[in-house]
Amino acid sequence: MSISQQFCTFVLDGALFGTPVKNVQEVILQQPITRVPLAHHAVCGLINLRGQIVLALNLRRRLGLRDFASGQQPINVVVHTQQDSVSLLVDDVGDVLEVDENTLEKPPETLRGFARKVVRAVYKLPTELLLELDIDRVLDLKDLTSPGDDRDF
Image (cartoon, rainbow, N blue to C red; front, side, top):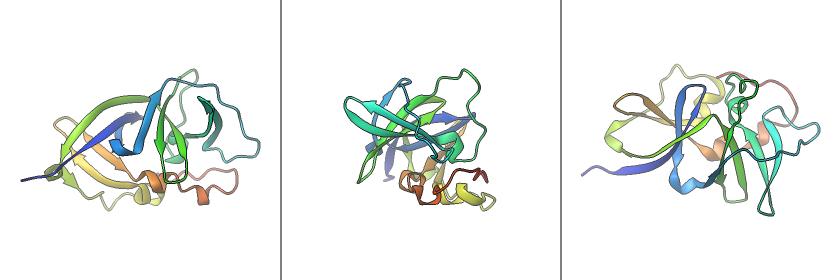
């Protein structure tokens, strides 16, 4: 008997990413963002989510992908950690998918840099690949101590 897991999926730069449903608090459309001076380029700022102040993180920048196109309205996937909630800005939200562990593959050895740290697994779906993100590692912002460009995906 194989084990399956449910993932909340989202799209970034044409690739399908996901995180276990248990990590996701909610999905919301674009929210006004208050910029934080001198913050790292991956930190867009703060949003007010029904009275809760939540960090908004540009997931494209965090992963070293091309930035959002001019005028593109990102969607907020609010995930929770042991300490806080964080809004991940993504291109689009996909379906909740139930994937079987039999489709699981280890990330390829060719992944370099930050991607190697945050892509936990790859699942083979009928028409595409699902890249499982390790949300705790994505949200570990210790390496974002100063503004700059950390693209190495």
